[in-house]
Image 1 (cartoon, one colour):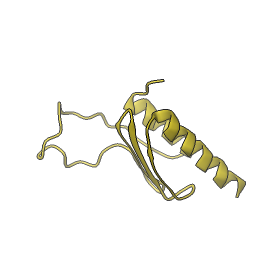
Image 2 (cartoon, rainbow, N blue to C red):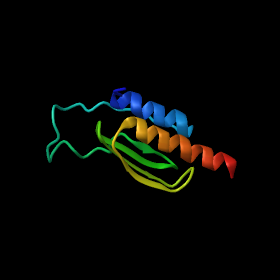
Image 3 (cartoon, rainbow, N blue to C red):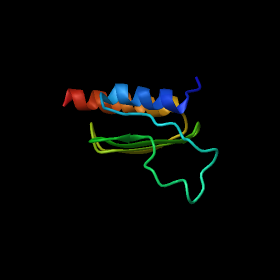
Image 4 (cartoon, rainbow, N blue to C red):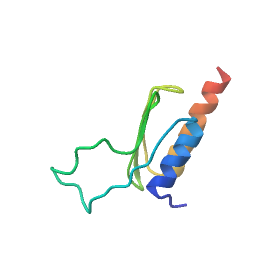
Length: 91
């Protein structure tokens, strides 16, 4: 299943029960002058989940458990988040 970035980040927020507001990229491409605002994938109090492309997703979380991964699909990343959430709930 192919996820849009917005859908992916919304699903991550739902799994983590965290706040996230998606801001679409207003420019055609990244340049040295327009890449100054903080991007999507920030989950305050939890950490970062960055979707660089459909096969390159970086997870760096402090909560619900410390998790540092490089995933090769959105499904793999979401499964890792669900597992981390379940691990936290059992503790």
